[in-house]
Length: 153
Image (cartoon, rainbow, N blue to C red; front, side, top):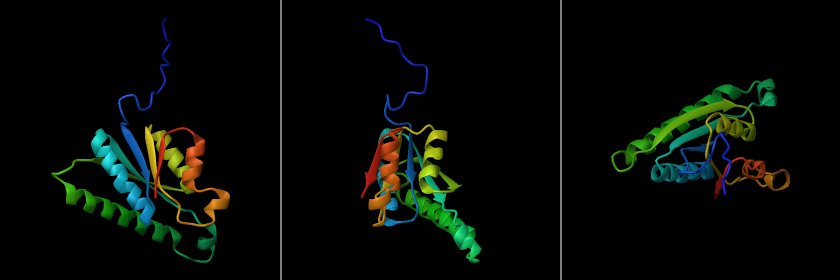
């Protein structure tokens, strides 16, 4: 009996090679980053940390420096990640890179996961009550069914 194998991209056959984790500075996203970092270390995978800077037209119209604020959040996230990596340097080696995009979190994570050919996506559980009605980023990623998605509480 023979099997035909697709010549396309194959995910997860030897363990994940690229793990995408979405961060936004919330406690649950930082827990997700820590979990994804441990997974990347154990699997010898690349950890792609993704921050999607929200675009808020209403905030910009009111004169709020939205772009400056989200740029500062991105810089702070990189600083936190570097500090965490430095604390465990020597004990654990994790290859990681930081990506930032602008837009809505779901679309940004999908774009990053597709571009990076992610084998897995890790996100923190939503901390907003309204997401029970319209669906959180995590639920939308799971429903997309394109990668294994781990939701960290």
